[in-house]
Structure formats: C-alpha cells, structure tokens
Length: 201
Image (cartoon, rainbow, N blue to C red; front, side, top):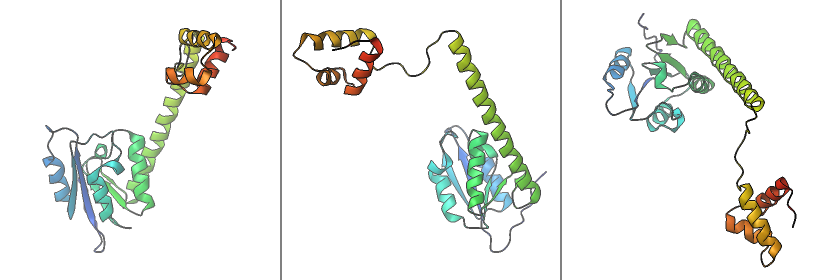
C-alpha cells in the first residue's frame, strides 16, 4: 500500500537517501522520495549503515533543515541504520524534537496513530532483542567459566616478563618505576603483576 502524503502548509517534507557502496544506485530511493513530494533530498553516498546517522554529513544536513512539526522521509528503515535499536534511537531523537517520520517501504507514518503505534511496537522488539543478547552473553560466560576458561582482558605483562623484572630489581641498580618504563607499562601495573605472582622486592 502506498503512503499518501498528508502535509500541512506550514510543514516541510525533507527526504534522506543513503547507499553504502559505490556500485549501488540512489535512483530508486530518489524516485520514491520525489514521488512522495519531498521539497529537498539529502544524500550520503558510500556511507555504511554501521555509522551512526548523527555522524553522517547528509543526515546531519537534513536534520538542520527540520523544525518542530516537519517530516523526515526515507525510502526504507535500513537507510537509517543496520540495527533495530539504532533505528529506534534515531526515531526517538526525532520525536523529542517534534519531527515526524515516514518510511515508504514499511508504510510507517508517525503523523498517524497507527504509524506511531507501529514504531512503538518496533521499540519493544528492540528492547526484547537487547535482552535476549544480554541473556545469551551471560549464559556464554557462565559456560566458559565452567569449562575453566579465563575471561577478561589478558594481562599487560606475562609471568615470565614479571619474573625477569623481579630478578633485575632484586639485583639492584634499577627500581620498579624504571622497569615499568622499560616494559611500557605503568608502575601500578607492574606492582599488581608482582602481587599476582606473590613476588616481593
């Protein structure tokens, strides 16, 4: 079903289009946005959907043209970003500024009650997705611990390096701060390493 443009006289209707690779073409997006009646269309070419919309030149320029009550139009939701959570965050920002949002392919129009309800439903799905990811991560960590795997970042200094440093300090002529500098770590990091191995000086 095609969305019908319902724009008040005082509203601006701004389009946004994005392609991520040079071999893609903006034509289909531009045709859809022009058909809807966008006054101006701002583009990002060769820009990945993984880059936050607020860090894209075309999207930022489009936002600068929009005021309370105006409408931002995209051809498809994924033009905003890759993840559902990222898309919802962007739509929430638009809502906070009083900017309406239309996605032509998904038939989403926040100027209507149904459009706002559907966007809210997507937000609930995003929260569910985030919760499931967190739950899977926790289960994975617990399983790794049961298998005896060590978790977390690796130590800055290995056991052998710490023992060599300890011997050099014990021999005299060099202190902990000097040895830490030689190994490119902080004084505290070396002290924690010694403590971990039960080494004293």
